[in-house]
Image 1 (cartoon, rainbow, N blue to C red):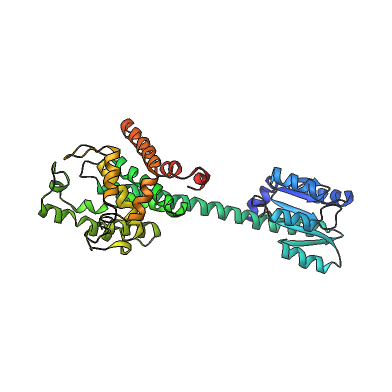
Image 2: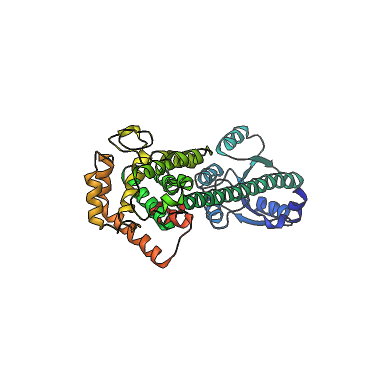
Length: 371
């Protein structure tokens, strides 16, 4: 690493800030053979140059007219785009209090005047190396995080698809339902981060159907009681599969899978949970799932009209569904119908966005960069 940095040192940019031309000339003479050097004779100009070029290191005089070195470093540290630039203060001998204050403000080192060229080169090289190594580490962490996220999203897609592999639902159903869940969660007060996590977990709600026989999943009619008892086991099967992972996403998915068929009045399955004993995540997904199921064609029924589906959801308030969530769902009819139209258009064109695209389009505009 060190030898590579020596060979590539000219690729690094250094900003020298000093109001004394003689000091600038000395530092230019020392550094310019090894680095790309820009100079600023004032603190105000230094901040403009730093914003434009973002140097790899700054050599900063303390005592300057106008903005002092302390003022400059305060401004740098308050700017997220500049606060990681290492700053070395250049100061006269006998200014111990200044050194203490400088370190408190975020300086990484001090160089005292009169300047010693070998010392300047050694200090600069050390901090350039440290900053470069830190930057490379951050890039590697970002790369690994992106790879992990991609693997996790692949797992989501596979588990979601597995739950509907043997039935007649398209992949659009699970993501349309997830989009409804996200809209309802946010309208009900969930944070963007929580709602986006829910939107990724919701498509896995029927993962347990992978353990249900084809004859039941593909039956072009309503199931009899014996068949329904088998079908109901998918909630437990999904919970068992998804609970193998202890990550927040799969814990949430496991919770939803287990409880999305519970009912507010306690007549649901598999545990007969009642009211707020049912996790809120599952109560949200239950409404989204039923609304989507009603408004799509099934082997045994035609799609209901939107208004009939909304009326059914309302009629089940306090019985199947949480009354507060029903009221919230009905208050965002326009959002739900816009979401439905968007996904129906994609289904008609046989287009399926990636999970990243889904999250990006589902998040509020102000949060899409983080989605």
